[in-house]
Picture 1 (cartoon, rainbow, N blue to C red):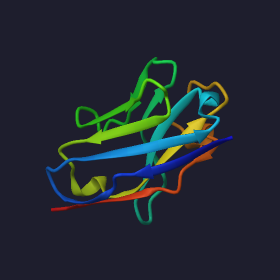
Picture 2 (tube, helix red, strand yellow):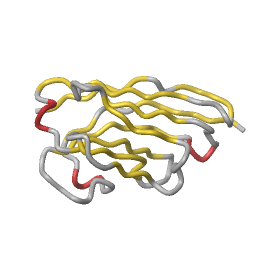
Picture 3 (cartoon, rainbow, N blue to C red):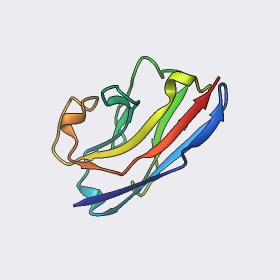
Picture 4 (cartoon, rainbow, N blue to C red):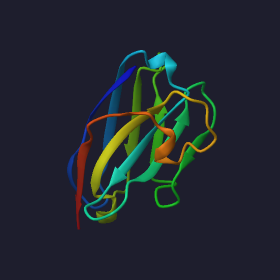
Length: 125
């Protein structure tokens, strides 16, 4: 099992930056990929960014390309999301997730079987 705990959310003005962290415990080595998702009130959960834990390719939603960067530490225990040039539409609950079954659809929430509790990000105009 993989236990995930997010931190780093908060309230910022448009144009500001935040760095989210997700610490994985338990059996993090089981994860083939990890990702960040977000959900705004009244909207479906959407994939923001994801990464294969073997150091492979990454995925970014079109809405965050060039502004957000996903990374992991060498021990593959902590996942990060650096968010720059934040916009009000980036507001939402951000969730860290891990997938322990190989998949090519790391942008899809259904492929992830472990989830954190979320951290709130609020961007004001």
